[in-house]
Length: 220
Image (spheres, rainbow, N blue to C red):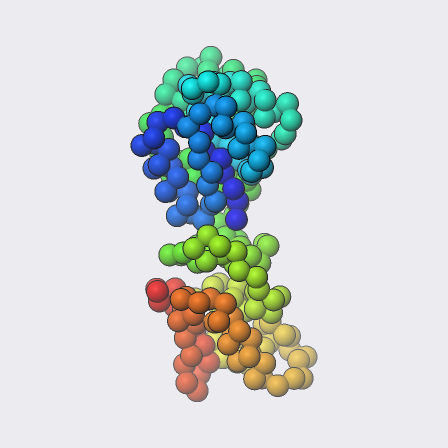
């Protein structure tokens, strides 16, 4: 799960961005003061910083300069100002991007994903359950859940084929390989363990008697 530090003293805007990005499976640290922003930057080591310019105590320009002198972590500048001077100054200080207020959250999300190289095809999130097929990392309501390699592979296959009926034979061929000579009940065992780790989301994996399994993301 990627961690984003939001530095914004307009509380309504900060809260809106916070809620929106949390729902997109980001971990958020939010501060409203320039001095605290620098402290949190060093304490939390975020993956990206959303940085307002006009802040109490220390302005966004100085924060960006401080960050860039010590780190390559991406910075997106946020400001109500809409001038070439401000944009140029931010980029000269090492900011990676620049967005003006009022902020379109969908455009902001697209820029964050581009900078962090997040591919929507590899990242899945639905109603509290997140899975990254590159890292094979599962998160449930923002909390990381450890999976074994086979559990990760089966969950990834379910998600990519949600709504389809998957027989044991199909799962064995895709996960274990065509040359697998073990017991096909291994599928049931892995799925039982996976369901336990999914907790309240376990009902997303449906057993279809005599047919196999399917993944229903609308459960829970």
